[in-house]
Image 1 (tube, one colour):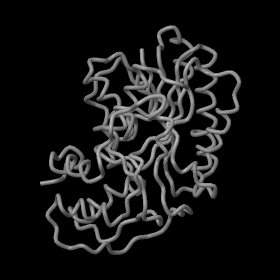
Image 2: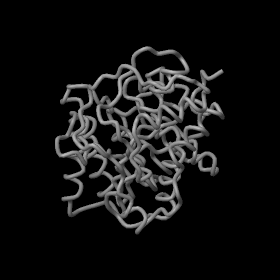
Image 3: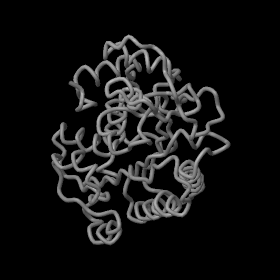
Image 4: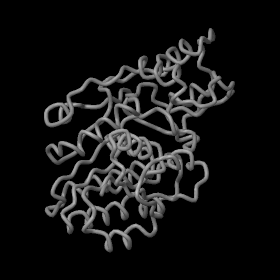
Length: 296
C-alpha cells in the first residue's frame, strides 16, 4: 500500500493519476479534503481510502503493516504568508514525525522540498520551514531504509487553480492573456527553471520502482528561462499578438539572478530521461486543454 500526503494538491494529485495509469490503485490519500477548490483534483481517482491530515498518524500506527511506501508531498505552500507558526507545525514538525514514523517502521520515504531552500537569504517562512527540515533530515543517523528529498523547481501544469497567487508563473501569464487578467503577481527574479508536471511525476514513479541512492535531489530541467520566454511561448500557442508583460509585483524576494536545477545527483544515481523544454511543455498543456480547462 502506498501512502501519499498532499494527495489533493497539485503534484500529489498528478502522481496519484500516474499510479492509476499504471494500474496501481492501492493508495491512501492524505490531505485536507474539506477544501472544495481541490475536489476536482482527487474525486475521480482510484484509491483505497482518504485520510484527513490530522488523523494520519493515528491511522498509520494502526495500519503500519500494510504500508509499503510513503510519499510525503503535502505542505503549507503559501509563499507570501508570514504565519511562521503554521509553517513550523505543518512543514517542519509534521515532516519530522513522518520521518520518525518511516524510520521506526522501515518504510521507504520520498518527500517534497523546494529550490527556495538553495537561497542563502531564505526568502519566505515557507522556504525556512523546508530548509530547516532538509538540514534536520541530513543530520539524522537513523533513517528510513531508503529516503530522498526532492527539491522541486517551478512546476507547472493542470490542477493549479486552487493555488491562486502561489501558482506558477506559467499559469499566471496564461491567465493574463487567456482571461484578460490586468494584474498578476510574479517573482522578482525573472530567471527560473520551469518543469512540466508530467516530467515530475515520471521522476516520482521512477523512484518508486527503482529506489536509487538516498539523499537530496534537485528536480528541474537544468535550464533557467526568463519571464519573457514564458510569455512568448504562451502568446504563440494562444495566438496573441501583444508582447509586453505589464505590471508585476515583487512580493517574493530572491537573491540569485539565475535559478536552475543541478541535475548531477539525479543523472548520476537515478533518472536519465530528458525533460520537455519550456516551449514544448507549454505547447502540450495549452493545445491539449490538459492544463487549463477554461481554454475555449
